[in-house]
Image 1 (cartoon, rainbow, N blue to C red):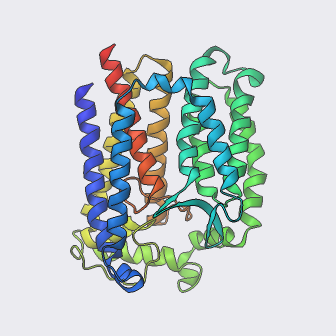
Image 2 (spheres, one colour):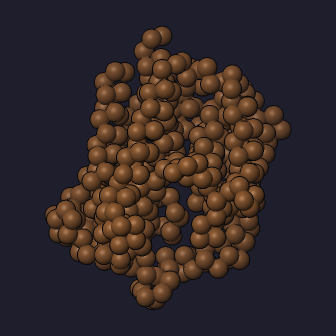
Length: 363
């Protein structure tokens, strides 16, 4: 599978390179005005990229199956971190959300670690309990309990986007492993009232839904972000207005270098640019699925599926939000959006995927 590894590495390098260029383009003017340094976000992103690259090579240097020895302690540590980040004075609060630990110049987001930890734990559980996954008490309930604990802690931050992502990835892995579809269906129905409460009873989430349904009804209010995103994409036309010539990044489109970076790509490089990014992610999902299909080790098989599902869903949701197909979720575009913990753990996930392929070749 060496050819697949080369293909995935090439795709990720291309996405990272696009991210570096577009983060500077989208944030330079904002950073110059707010931080006094046009390269502020680019330099920080590059620092996270270096950390993530070292972490990636680190996870590629050992047999990924060794992770099974540490999966339970890792889950416990993750849950403890999710609890600690909610404590005032320990967790950093920004715009009403308490999601980060401040470690020197770095903000560490434990929910990003949780995505990977839950994925690894689920893969190990499914590999151990494959014959019992259809059983509600022995195969389904234990994973749902873990999901419930992690989800509750992340929702408290609050961070509904990552909660839904973690739940979706776990259920995809369980479904592929042969979980009873009736159990999954019942869980889905029971979660609907909870989702309704979390959306309808929280003002800013309800506003996001209203804005999603018709952003132009209040384009200067609750629909401002989505309408500006659509203006950016529409302004790019087929070939775009050119690198660095975006108008929407001039304080019109909020989060231009983070959640809505695809809109700036669309404005500066047009439909050709956005389609190129979509095709790169499609190629990544395809090649990742090929690794999973060829992996005979059950743990590696489920782990590969989980990694591809996690990164693929993040990309789909972010792209969907940018074009107005989904409500705003706050999920960055993998490898391209500015971000610290997200970039680091996404690179670690890729390292694990390449590790699975490498070990499979050795056996």
